[in-house]
Image (cartoon, rainbow, N blue to C red; front, top):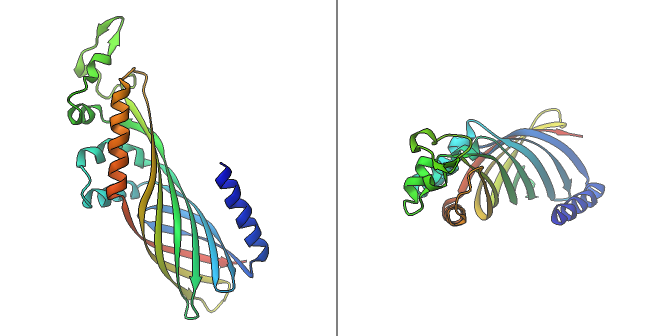
Length: 235
């Protein structure tokens, strides 16, 4: 929270010194639908974006991570968490005189809590007996009645931080108030946190192994290329 406060202070300072200000909306494919603001001063600009991660981008991101070599079972374990989430992006760009620009960026993805497929978890960690935790009135509950049940389900919430590079181009309209910006970018994972919850008291060892394996998967394989298109309105 303190880091976010410092970022907002810096952005407020830059806003006061900005020579030009603009707002933008568009999409980072396959990451988000986004709305943001841009502050320009001399050859530099700072861009702040907020966006939503939702269909169809959810499956595309995971397919990309899997294509880099991630285990398909672990991808299935996190898949439902990617159905909805929000994205925060901070970009620092350098602009050349020919409408070309390049930059670096940080991107934070917060993924909503969603249920994980217990049958896949059970097969991925055969040494941990999930069904021994399925107890009602002191008696074990039949396995076939509990997969997909809201009482036995495990919910996962993930947060990821990516760092990336971009190159972009500005297409000017006859009216200088408007322009289209297109970018090619690619990011690499640098941090993640995963939270698990369930009404069923599963062993802590299960959550520890899930956290370690998911974090390692993101670390090794979460490379996300992106094609970004924005409509920009100068203020």
